[in-house]
Image 1 (spheres, one colour):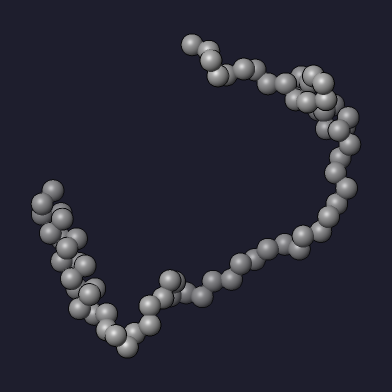
Image 2 (tube, rainbow, N blue to C red; image 1 turned 90 degrees about the vertical axis):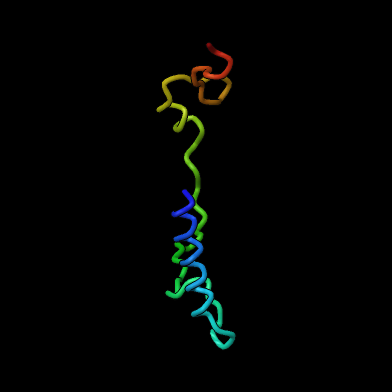
Length: 71
């Protein structure tokens, strides 16, 4: 493990030698843009239609098997 750490330390030293005060730091050398779809409000499905596709419901909610507390 010591030899691996030495390789890492040598790599850090070489980067520190190359970095100079006149070079601006960058977070990413490639300019990135965020591509987002427009936020357009839509009418949601009615609760009855959504719950109709569920295998089990109770009191207007989905029912799933309990997984916590089992051994």
